[in-house]
Amino acid sequence: MNCSELNSLSQKMETWDPERILLWAAERFSPRLVVTCSFGGAGTVLAHFISRHQLPVPILFVDTGFHFAQTLQFRRELASHWGLTVIEVRAEESVAEQERRLGPKLYERDPDLCCRLRKVEPLARALNDLDVAAWAAALRRDQSPARRNIQILEFHEVPPGRRLVKIHPLANWTREDVWRYIHRHGLPYHPLLDEGYTSIGCWPCTQPVRPGDPERSGRWPGLDKTECGLHTFSRRILPPEPGM
Ligand code: SF4
Image 1 (cartoon, rainbow, N blue to C red):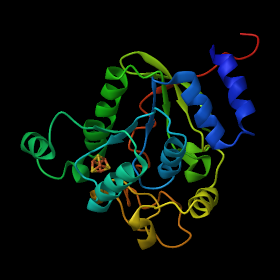
Image 2: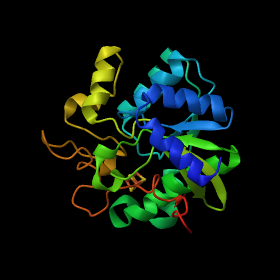
Image 3: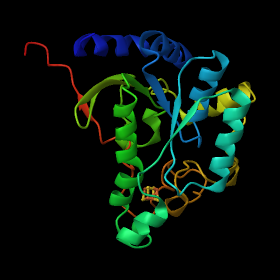
Image 4: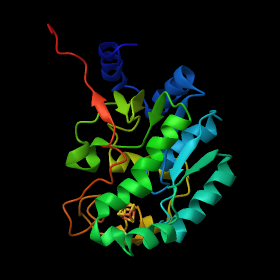
């Protein structure tokens, strides 16, 4: 499938149910399809699709060493209850080793470097080591301005040169759609979502928000930073303009 064909299929998928999109992806790409999930929100919906169709699709969980204890416990319980295959992706250095080398609280002094070392580089390495051809994630357009233009299917290049299809089955869902699905199916969800957190990442960089505040405003509060880099480090390859 070339870039233009992928783009056309992506447009067609705008009318598809997200579950159908993930089923298509599993059919098309397994065993080289992975889903990334931090178990903090909409990723639970993708994990539920995998579980209820018993898809042979592993979940990559980027364990930064800074997750809330509740996240780790919820991930363990859900994986066991739903029979999920979770691959933990970690930095080569532990937090203690990183602190010996670069000093304490790098997340305060240089959060971009901290995210690169603890999230981006480990995920890029895993995508290459696992020979991944397609990567699905639970991004939605309504989450933030930075995510407003995501497509359901995108071609990406992951350093140092791997090309893969990035899939966003929930791109056109809203936060309300996610909660509707969770309630309709009686799904368990991350306990901090009941304590004012609307987007859950590492504990040093995540705060609860006030009702009505933007969903991701509790991430890196007080900083311009809005993304950790997991969804911006790969280069999106765009189809050529007609006539070029
Ligand atoms: S979110 Fe914060 S603690 Fe987690 S990797 Fe990024 S800077 Fe470090």
